[in-house]
Figure (cartoon, rainbow, N blue to C red):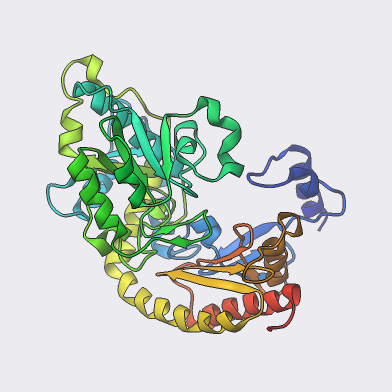
Amino acid sequence: MAEIHSIIAADKAHCWHPFTPMAEWCAPDHEPLVLVEGQGALVWDSHGREYIDGNSSIWTNLHGHRHPRIDAALREQLATVAHTSFLGFTHPRAAQLAAELVALWPADTLTRVFFSYDGSTAIEVALKMTAQYWQLRGNPERRRFIAFESAYHGDTMGASSLGGIGLFHDRFVDWQFPVVRIESLDRLDTRETADVAAVVIEPLIQGAAGMRLWPRGMLADLRAWCDRQGALLIVDEVLTGFGRTGTMFACEQEGVVPDLIALAKGLTGGYLPLAATLTTERIFEAFLGGPERTFYYGHSYTANQLGCAAALASLSIFREEAVLANLAEKIALLTRLLEPFKDLGHVYEVRQYGFIAGIELRENPLTPYRVDERVGARVCLAARRHGLLTRPIRDVLVLMPPYCITEAQLRAAVDALATAVDEVCGAAS
């Protein structure tokens, strides 16, 4: 226990946590949860308490902690080399991973893969690639991006330009890319389009907006609009990619192939930071020629060997363990388990797409809770006492567990949320 006190003291003295009010975190009476072990859909803290990982370690972990196949792949890779430069060099894992990612799409569609670190950088790549593409094509007037209200695409400067959540992005507006934000497709036909470089969207569901669902067919309609206007379509599948909506990619559900797609989070099964931006041969060919056409963008750990090894192992799990087929049954079970929430007092709406669920709390149907009440955070803290770890989006409770979660664990997770809502918001009305 003395060692844990030392760790907490060092953390409070030196660490700066993302999206965390640090005055509260560093307060003397606050004891941070120190997570020290994981197995499958479970994690344990420094006191030996067990929790269900209800948000897949911030939406990343697909197959569970310490999956033997991914563990073995990393050990095998460590026996050779951990990392080598991808700038002017290559290695077997990156080439194989790129080929396998391309093979997940229809032939001759998305054929090129640019590796980076995380969702933000995958989007950053897509934006800069798009901007340079139109310059190289002799259409520099196409420099404006269209994004959607309540969107979230990351926190690097280009990615944050797209964001429609003021809390995250408003203070940086003077440094951002030229972006027009719209609420729906109806707004697209009301503006001049000759300067539009690309439209960027989270397909089927907006994550940080509170798991807000798009109307069915909207993505296909957007693809058709981009085709008519000559604009590119950039799809952000950082959240939805690799099975979260029930298919490998959300785009599949509406038969859409984008011009560029950003992948991250679940790419390595939640083990290591690695991202990929896939694009078409048409876009790639615009960059061929002299040095002035080179895409001058990259990172030190691009296509790092350990990350690629983990990603390849994750894809092999999909193929050899019937992940998507088994997931269909769990999605149906989750739908049934969430049904009683609709009758709970203070539950305004239950939103689900695939293995993603958001439960929105309100004081009453017309009145959201005040921000300073922090009801969502309080419910998640209460759920922790019942063995569930998750994190809200304001007053939307998120449940997005690893695919390996058992039926009993999934029932326990939903029960923990229901109990926590009752404890914080009062009995059902």
